[in-house]
Length: 109
Length: 187
Ligand SMILES: [Zn+2]
Image 1 (cartoon, chains in turn purple, yellow):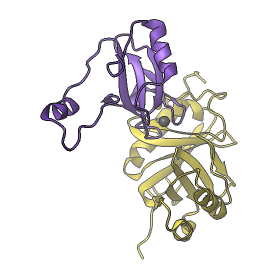
Image 2 (cartoon, rainbow over the protein chains, first blue to last red):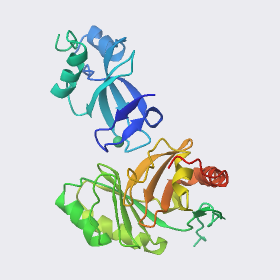
Image 3 (cartoon, rainbow over the protein chains, first blue to last red):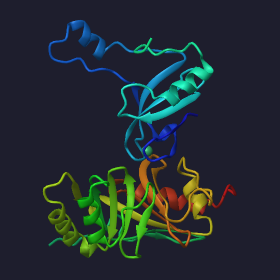
């Protein structure tokens, strides 16, 4: 069972209260971008066995979207944070590195 | 004018835990920026109540203001006062970014009371109803069985449950059946 704390209402929401929204921190391709950029934005996704940054929605609760860092293999949660962020916050990154010292995110690697 | 009737017209299942559909009840969804002074002032002026803290509600016994999300409140008030309230709220908030919607006839509201009401609700929701965790004055949006619902706990230990009108029969049946089945001894 997966429990994620919603950063908006503080509830430790159980999986059935949540809706998964795929990979977090995608950057939208826009007018003038190449076909490759659009292909990447629309279709190319991380498919990690391990630490993954994801979007989740507290669908049956406050209804808000938030982001979560978790291990897809063990379901260990390293932290949840508001959707209005462009990269994982420092405390979440610290939690991940405490477990996986070599971890790096594609955007900061 | 047509004769307004609530979803289950006051249907009641009596027992150690009594489940009652509360009949016609005014319910208004309010959305806006809680930090905005104009919004907060309008809520306080027209309800007599403060905007509640996260997952809390404020009540004077007649009107209740419930925290539904960081930008959404549910106001519960007498059915006959709804239209005047919505008009007054629209007047007070005109020009700002807000939403006021009369959802009285789009929702169903229930009372769940009795010695093991907590257990009855706990059977159907992924929520910790332990008395020290779910205290009076608290509201929680989650689900009842398979459908979305919100519930809050009153000072007397009873609960109010709100769901969409279209699933009122399901929610009533589920809670009433769970009540008939007795307590499980968790709480
Ligand atoms: Zn939430």
